[in-house]
Length: 491
Ligand SMILES: [Fe+2]
Image 1: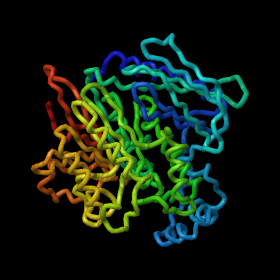
Image 2: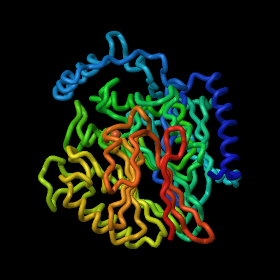
Image 3: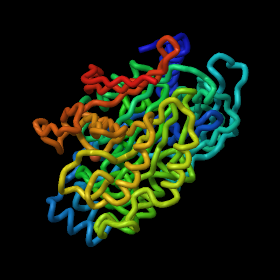
Image 4: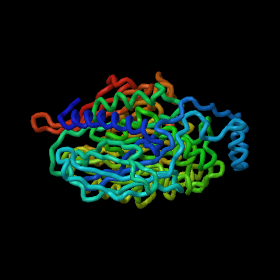
C-alpha cells in the first residue's frame, strides 16, 4: 500500500473541511449535503460529479421501523400496483416517509462547484450557482471537461437557500484522472458488489469502505446491487420508496466519506434497476422498467450516454465497464443466436476495442459472471446454460488473448476461476458483508476453482513494474481488509 504526499495531504484537507462543514451545520438551517457527493465515468479529460441537497445533515438514525408485509402480500402489492396500499402496508399509521429510520429527505436550494488541481490551487474553476432539480429528488450533476490526465483534483461544493447569499453547508473531496497510455504508473483499484442498507456490519455503513479507504485506491468500481429495491423495509414498489432507499444509503458515513475521495465507476444490476433477474419491459409495483433505469442513470448516479465505457489507466492497464441489463433479452426465452445480454452493438464495441488496445493488461469488469461456475437453477448470466450461445461466443473470442482478465459482481461469494487449457480467468469480488454472503456451498470446490470463499469482502487489483517488468496482482480481502488470496501475472 502506498501513501504518497498527495494522499496524506488530501486526507488532512478532508479532515479540515469536515470540521468546517460541522461548524457551518451548527450555524445554519440548511440545506445540507447529507448525501455527500459522488463522481462517475472519469477518463483523462472528463468526469461527472453528482450531489443532492438534504433537509438534515445526517440520515434519521432514530426513526420508526417499517412494517414488513408477508411474501404473499408483497406479491399482491406488486401486482395491484396501488401506491396508497403499498405505502399503508409498510409505513405505520400517522407516519410519513420522513419519520422512517434512515430517512434523509431532500431540500430545495442552490449549489456551486469549485475544483482545482491539488498541486495548483490557484488554478480554480468555479461554476455558477444552480438550483438542484426538485423533480429529480433534489439532485444535480456537473459534467467537467478539459481536465488534465494523471492529476489529483480537489472538489469543493457549497450550498445555500435559493437566492440567498449565506452558505449553508460546504463539502470537500477529491478525485484523480487516469494517466494516458504512454505513462508507466502503478495503479491500484478496488471492486465491490452487493451490499445494501440493512445488511451493513456497522451502524455507520459497511466495514469494507473503512478497509478500502486505507488503501487509497486510484479508482473503485461498484459492479451493482448497490441497493435492493425488492427487499423489505421497505419494498420499493413506488418511485418515492426507490428514492428513499438511495437517500438512506448515501447518508451512511463510511460510504459517504469514501465516495467523496475516490474516483468511482458505478454499474447497476438487477436489484437497482428494478428487481431480481430483471429485464427490459418488466415492472415492479408501480414502476415500469424505463423509469427504474432513469432513476438510476439520470438521477441517482452520474450520467453517461451509454452506460458502458472503456478507460485506459496508464500504459499497463485498460478497463472495460460493461452494461448487463439495458440491452438484454427476456431471460425466459430459449437460448440461441438471437438471445443476448450485452446486445450486438455493445459486443461489437467490446471486441473491437479489445483488439485495438495495446495495454499490457486488459481487465473487463462485468456485473455478472461470464465463466462462473454458478448455480444450476440460474438463468440470468453468461455462465448459465440459458445464455450458453452468446456466452460461448464471448468466451471463445476472449480466449485468443493472454492478457485479458474478467472481474464480476452479482454472486455473493468470492472466487477465482481459471478454465483449464484456456487463457480465461475470472475474479468474483463477493458480497460486501459476511451476512450478505451465501448462494454457494463452501465445500463445493470445482476443478476450475483456484479459490473459493463464501464470505464478504472485496477484490483489489494492482498493476506495477518490477525491474521494468509489468505485473498484475489480484487480491481478495475480507471485510476487515485482511488479504485471503492472491494471484500474480507477469508479462
Ligand atoms: Fe446481489
